[in-house]
Length: 247
Image (tube, rainbow, N blue to C red; front, side):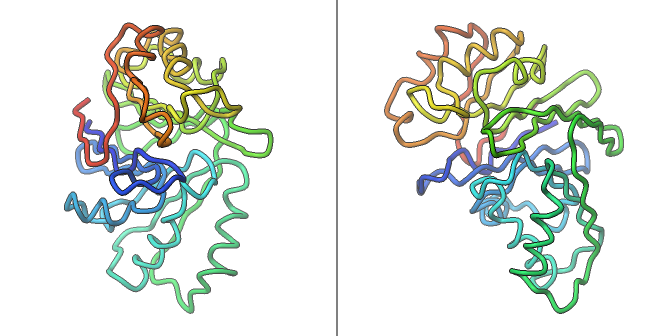
């Protein structure tokens, strides 16, 4: 497995950090997790063919995690040839979101490829020899959110998305090899993590390697790794756009 960071930033515009996007490659399978603004451009920079991505998974429906979905659909219809269906997965409410996107905003005269959509709660998705398990995760009182656990052979990656320090995140990440988790701010804010609270989750979950991401400018001014390591003694990686990690 190989993980590529397409976007390690947030809603705050940063030239060097796109909004959320993570690509997991396993053999010929390319699985995209979230597609915030800038995802398509990062794929181009890394010479990854957008039309080779047939499965996209969304943690939640906030714009900084899903903004490029409309652009992906538009590009697939008018900017190139998609040979296989586009399979989209997301939390409760995703079907309604896509209906509004397709019929109220994009208003495509003709769709030249098939889109399959599935809402997930606590589910298993099997794609070839890859298993993706989903876990409901608390982000905010008005937002449905899910975490993903990607398993292949004896290795696993967990991507939590936006959340606070809670038992749901710990359960999703239990004993994983790599945990990708947000580290938004230097201070506690409901529905987001600090370096310290992200470290607490990783420690309680017995994670091997912690990948911190989703940085607002304020937290980038602090010593993120130092604060996190007070709680978590394992390997800590600070995500950067275009970073590639072999699992």
